[in-house]
Structure formats: C-alpha cells, structure tokens
Image (cartoon, rainbow, N blue to C red; front, side):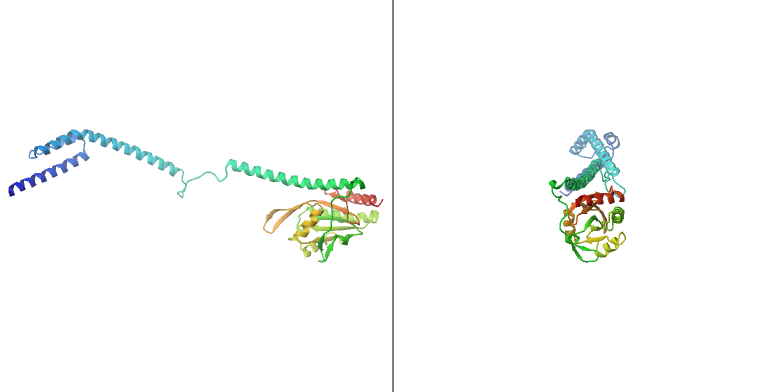
Length: 312
C-alpha cells in the first residue's frame, strides 16, 4: 500500500514538472522549437503523453493567435502614442492646451460695428439739438406771427461770489449766455475770449452794455471758487453761474443745451456740449443764437443788428 502511494506521488510530481517546462517553452519559443528542443520523457503515462501531443498540435494556432494579438496591441499602442503626441503638440510649455487667439474675426467685426453705431448715434443726437436751436432762432426772425421760441426759462443757480441768482436778476439788461466748463482745454477759452472782445466792441460802436454770462455744465468739479477764478481771467463783467446737477440739468434743458461726459478716466474727464451763445432780451426772452463760426466782428455786428431790430 505504501509503495503504491509513493509511486502515484512520483508520477504526479513528474507530470507537474513536465507541464511547467512545457509551458515555459511555449511562451518563449515557437512550436517548431518545442518539437526539436524538448523530448517528452518515456516514463510519463500514456494519458499525459496524449496531452502533450495535443498541445504540440495546437501550438501553431496558439502561436499565430499570440502573434496577431501582439500585432493588434502594437498598432493600438502606436495609435494611442500618436494621439498623445498630437495632444502634446497642441499643449503649451505649461501643459495646458493651446487655444486660438482671444479675439476672433467675428468678434472684431462686431466690436467695430458697435463702435460705428455709437458714433453715428452720438453725431445724430448732436445735430438734432443744433437743428432744434436753429429752427427756434429762424422762427423768431420770421416775426410775431411765428410765436416765441421755446428757449430759455426760469433757473435758480449760484454766482461766482456764492450768492443765489435767478433769471429775474437779469431783467432789464441785454444778456449773452454761454454754456461750458472750466476744465475745457481749448473751445471754451476761445469762445469766452471772443465774447469778452465783442462785449467791449458793442459798447464802443453802439453804447449798448451787454452782460456776459457763463453757466457751467460740469457741476461736479466747477465749484464756486473754481468758477470765480475762471471767469476773472476773461472779463471783469463776466458772471459765472454753477449749481447742483439737478439745477444744471434743468437750465440746460430750458435752453436746449446738449452736454455729456466723455473720455472719463477717474476724476479727469471732458464734457462735450453745444457751442452756442444765446442773446437774451431785457425780458429774458430768447432773441438769437450765435454759433462757433462767428468771429469777434460778426458777433459784434450781429448782436447790434438784433438789438436795433428788437427796439423797432
């Protein structure tokens, strides 16, 4: 009985050892190498020998399958490496994908069209305000049947001495009113110098005294002190008026004056506004306006002419 058990164990060990060697040879060499390099031991049982013969007959097919699988794995690996290389080619130095420029052509054209639209709207509104003033002036010149122009009206402001002033304080005097702001770089100083020179010439030619008035359209910066220093640079008779934003808005609307902040950068900005001088009668009624195209002589002659016609 013990001899039989030992014999079975020896046979089992021999079979396992042979299977292990055969498996190693199958994974490392082709089927032909297995047949020529390894010979099955004669001591193996018939059943085990049959198993090895079946394995040997199947080894070409297994080898072929192994080669096909290896080829597929190689092709898949190459394609994945190609994709990774493409992705890495689209990546920047920091590993992030490289994208297109921040502004596309479509965005550029949309921005350009928007800017052009804003410029067109701004110019149209400015021309409309000027046309309203021009039409009102022409209506006055047509005679009493045309009625009074809807320009002018009551206001409550503060003069450059800090005193409250209304439109009634100018009754009984011929007045020329100009709207501007003290931080204006060139146009306002030019217009006020022209007005100051015309006031002196009008008095020399006709003896008529004109009261020049400057009304600020920049109430945030044009304080009483700022306006006082500004008007003193042009003429001793020039009266400067300012007020809070609501009061300035009301008087500008009454005189059909257009104004708007532009190019704002912090506290430094400009104010675009109508460049018009308004000739007002002693009753503070609108008579005529004079635009930027008038020089000192034409302004002087125009004011004298309008005053003489008004007195008839």
